[in-house]
Image (cartoon, rainbow, N blue to C red; front, side):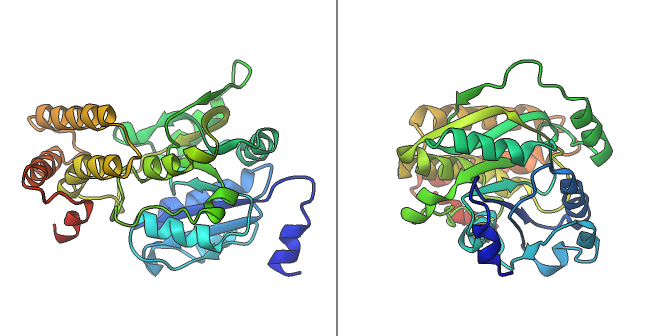
Length: 304
């Protein structure tokens, strides 16, 4: 049976693709992929786009009970995500980070949510614990947190400004109809690329946070993330660039810039072991210099 024939067999629901962009974290990627065996509703398509071939342990992925398509792509999160969007024939594409552990009913709830609400364009879930905001979580720690999680109230759907890229479901019909893409002028880890893409879709429907979509973001502190100087530059340059496109209000640019600058300044005195605060502060200051001299551009980090 061809892929197209298999996709066409789902007449009573929506087809769903899972898409994971990865860079330099093959071990945690393998653990996450195997963990996805627990999904009650299996994806109709499953894509992995690594920044380099060695980022994927093809033998390790054989433990996944289903088909996975590995798509080569240029280095950079927007590039990798665009490759998977272009390859998908599904109705919905669900982006997971390579260290995000979704609840077993995540994809089933995505299908129900988008079927019941045809005006939803982007949905992001409830992150039970987010290791990205600290030193990171070990795989077993994240798995136990997920097992202990209980939704204690009827699930709520609330408006939100943007999807959170670690777990973000997108309706592909408007993406295809209007030629929308992740902005490849945001290089490497592409700070706030999820904001920019979400806001491109707001003209066509709702962006929501859905409590019934649940998972744990490990926030693994290993390779695959921008060094401090690059990230610090992106914290300011990317906001200004997205604002100039019309996809972020000025008050959010101001609040985010001040928050990052002050946080990096204060914590650079006694930085956390897992954060390059001094590098981030240096990047912040370089971005401010470039803003004042009219040279600010997210792509400047390519030369750092």
